[in-house]
Structure formats: structure tokens, C-alpha cells
Image (cartoon, rainbow, N blue to C red; front, side, top):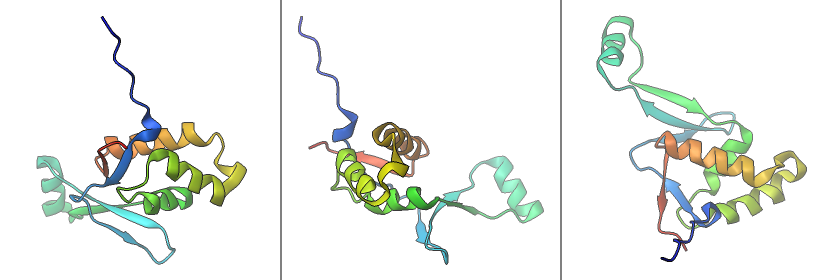
Length: 116
């Protein structure tokens, strides 16, 4: 029986999830809007005027990575752009980048399109 070839995460192509809004704030950082759903959030919205959408600010390198995600560039290509811009500050580059992109995916802020 032949073994199935393992997928290479660097070939994945991330894109923004259209269910989430995002904007650039006055500091030039990306903010992603997270809708507060569920019974407890609804109660907090009514009783304590908790906002319906919480805006999550991505830090400098995170905002840069977010802007590189366009549904066309692979994780590998995004990593090359990060290395060109941040140099040694980004090292260990691909370990950090893969973890960050997986975190964005687990939070449903991004999805993966077809691999190359």
C-alpha cells in the first residue's frame, strides 16, 4: 500500500474570510472585527452595553502579514516578503509564520484556497 504524501504547509494559500470585517486604524495597524455571538454575549450587550463587534488589533508584523494575505500568495511567498521587510527580527521565520497563520485560521479570520 502506498503512503499518502504529506501536505506542505508552505504551499497553502491563505485568504481573508469574508465573514469578518477588517480596517486600518489611525496607527496604521489592522483591526479585525470579531462578532460577539451567543447567549452570554447577547445578555452582556443588552445589560452592560458590551459591543456587538470587538475589534482585535494586529501588531506591526501581524498587520504586515495580514496585508500580504490576498488569496494568491502562498505561505512561502508571504515568508519571503516578511524576510525582506523584517530581516533577522522575523527569525525563526517559517516556524513563527506558520504558527501565526494557523492561529488566524483557527480563529476563522482566514481560510485556505486551493494549493498551487
